[in-house]
Length: 280
Image 1: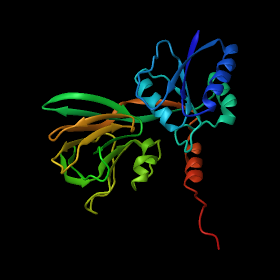
Image 2 (image 1 turned 30 degrees about the vertical axis):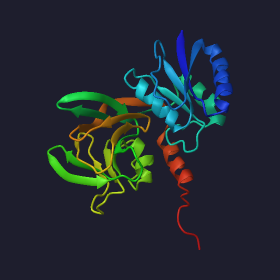
Image 3 (image 1 turned 135 degrees about the horizontal axis):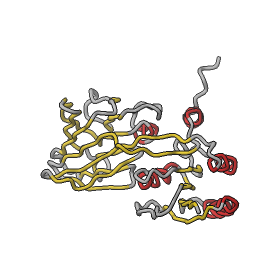
Image 4 (image 1 turned 90 degrees about the vertical axis):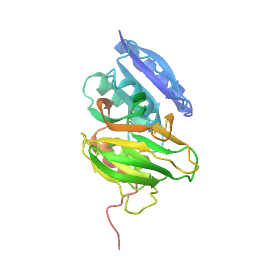
């Protein structure tokens, strides 16, 4: 018997009742259901014998599930109960139709690339994680400038003084990076976006880099700043002066149902209030 894992965001009131509806819907398909809750904490998911995951929440719930299931190559069926829904592309009113297509093998499954970030100290790797949206290096406190030396391959970009640095995937280009003035990248493209947050120098601009690029970021002494690396804003690790953060495109992908390109652009038009031009 196939098994479905339903991951529900505890802040969404409708999530529990909807999860029970989905469980009942899957009975004729002889698919058993197990449940998990996401409350913002980065807890491991039990993916034993799971064939697919249904997320009930916003993009944050998808990010949580994606980091867990990418290595297992388990597809995600993301139902949007949040506000933006750039990643969670299936609307609540459409879930039955879309899920039936998915179970019949007629739903489009798209692959989204991940960003890999590793922290090294004195030649030893301390942590290595993937992120669907971005890896961010910043101060733990608000309004504290951090100093970071950035290299792309053998090219030294020099010292960046900024509130932080975002390295995002194309999927993550619509998230924190976009809010920090970065470019929006079609998720079908293979690339990395390097985006300084409020840089001290106006010459530090966002860059779109090829997928094979490897970024090496060294933590430099910063006045009154404790520095942290975060993956998708959900997993955090404190770093010290001299630590290296190695960021590159991950070898893994996330498989998403119902996230076709037209839905991505419709979300852009809707969420960014694109009107198509000025009107006299």
